[in-house]
Image (cartoon, rainbow, N blue to C red; front, side):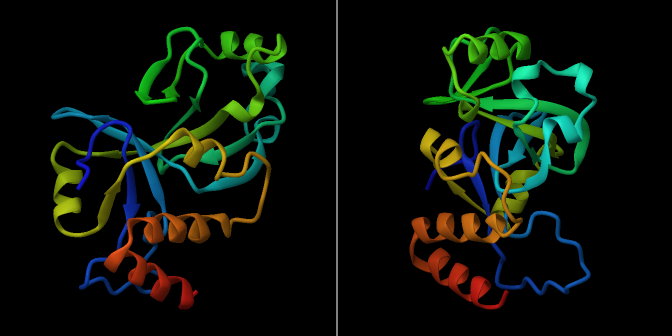
Length: 199
């Protein structure tokens, strides 16, 4: 099985003992999280399937971002912080970090905007993430061992083609999660069918 490392996707998975109550506020239920850092010191990632229903213009002070991103949808990347980060598939963005084949993180947003404006990149090549998910040292590995996450490989197509770049209903969350669990096959697929049927 793939191990937790930058570039993998964590797919939420209810362990056998999981008894969620409607009020328990399990933030990560039905989420898929792209890990961008995983070390003894820091583990961070972004929830992929949580669109905010807002564009950048609505969500962020307009004068802080280049105009090229004004109408881009914002995804809620997690419960922590207030930063706006870019996931993208444009290796020429200045100062970006390669996470996996064809998937990059961060970089100079003004340079990214200039690439869009000059036609060298498209707005659909980017996903803007507001806030992030994070774990204490050792916490994620413990959660994986306890069965709360399944670790999956990822691809640029998963992030940039399967996820909507336009605003849609929040139902994208369980649907996207269910399709990932089905791809994992076996018990994961059966768990997904049960979960989706109970929604």
